Image (cartoon, rainbow, N blue to C red; front, side, top):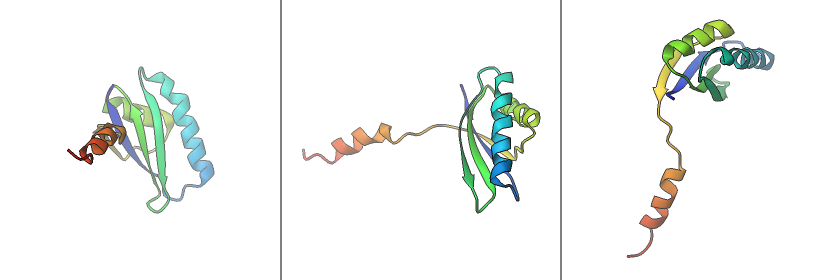
Length: 97
């Protein structure tokens, strides 16, 4: 399943506004086959969230945002890179020959 990063601008949003948006998002995700909201990050300085979703397409992300009545300012398909992939490699690279 493709992975997407969604940037959402929430100027002036309170914690209550963000909680309500998250609740609407979660309740609407069931309308989209295979979609999963994985996590979100709030950046108070820029008043935006970065949300990570699994979804079939960008179109599903847009439709989900419209149904949830939440912003959807940018969508990028992304690839997950986990540190675990490199930890063993880094440990063996530092061993003496």
